[in-house]
Length: 277
Image (cartoon, rainbow, N blue to C red):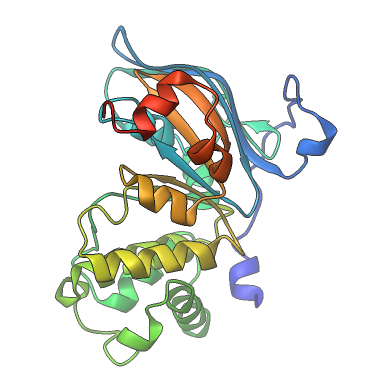
């Protein structure tokens, strides 16, 4: 893009770290966990999870409620740091650097690894100010740059045509589906490499859900996407890779088509067959 986006795309300043067991053919892995565990107090929410996210693909995290998939997703940009008593062990590697290290700048990490939550949470500001908030906070002041960032982000979120004439009206006046796409645009305004989505369509109607799914297929052309979903049909429709979590453990991960047709683990077969969940 123009200078406005590139000017904010500084890389996280961390020492490069060799990922144990990394193979040469895995060079397109943009983010990866190695033996990651997350604890709430003494309780392990996830245990020894090693999972890689290929660049420009959608990876769906599936499993029954309480299995740890949302906790795992939030750990990828250190969002669990906000929870009192939460701690991690193991590693999270973004472009070869371990972002769990104490020298990692959490705010910088979240510029590169954006997140959208289950329910739309627009700020009580205008549509324009919602999208421009992050770039402004990180030093983009020129009006022309901000206008460019807002327009491009809204276009990437498939929302521009619906809001271009109401940029300066309240974001809270948008429909639920529009608000969720606005939150996606707000994350995209920071020019991330990775986009984390925690059940982004669970609170939306079928039409809005369809738009979000279409958007995911478009976004993977420019971003690496990880999505938590309870909707198995949704995972099958939009994801390239699927990871199945159960009771805090990663049971199985692989190509979505193979996972849904010939899963290797009996627990995966039972879950996909509806025996539990």
